[in-house]
Image 1 (tube, rainbow, N blue to C red):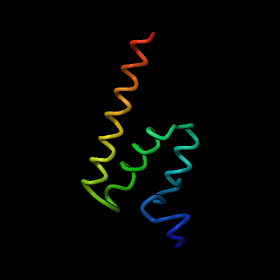
Image 2: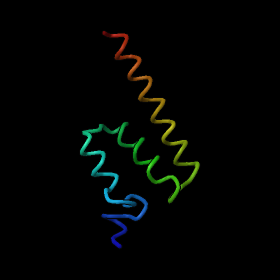
Image 3: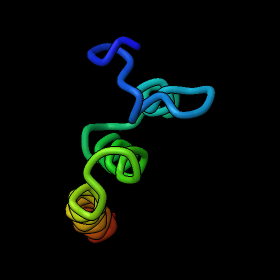
Length: 70
């Protein structure tokens, strides 16, 4: 197992987390949400869920600002 390029906490199933993020053309914030949700059971548990929550809150704030400008 290549723990640098293909770590096991990102390669569960048939698609790697990074490939999913790239396929959906996600930005940094969106990608981090997917990354932390994907790995939380296999790496840092609740800490990763809290990190995902931080980025979800940031994404909500950005979406609310975008909605105000329309």
